[in-house]
Image (tube, rainbow, N blue to C red; front, side, top):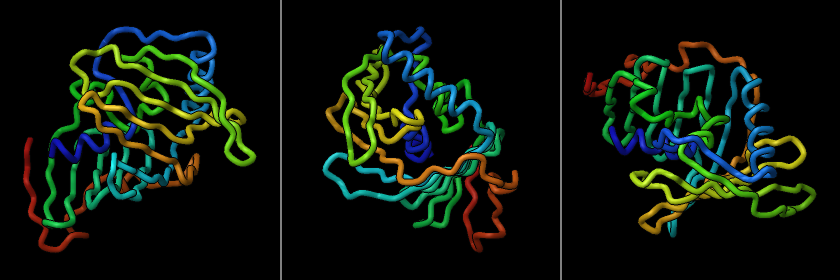
Length: 211
């Protein structure tokens, strides 16, 4: 369960510290513009490529609506209806259930994508870089939490529309992982039931209740 939840946590790059973040004027303006963009989106679906250090690139997707989310990645699917979190593991046909406590998770969930940088990081503008016809603003977030496994995060924001293009996480153990947003659909029409695990859809599933 812990490893599955770590995937959802690290995917949206949040920190555990309760200190206020700080940054230079340019990086602050970029991040605030990005934050403002996502705060006005009621729901979204994002497809992404996840590439661990020296590993094979994997595809995943996340759907978010308010405090609810559903994440698919590496043979696991995480359902969160805002109260109960269910992690389904395809290989073993097993689902782990536990109460969802956003305060205990340290804001580590996809519904806080636009505010993740506000706690536990200081940040600085690095550069502008062009890829084809697009220009990206690169901001470096450095963790201020000594207990965090994350050392720093390098995030690319599209200069034109302030959307997140990619981010690379540098862990304190020396490992890195990169997430590239392949497709982003704002304001998708999704029913609340999509975020609730339904055992009837998984014949023979073993239910492990950790509540």
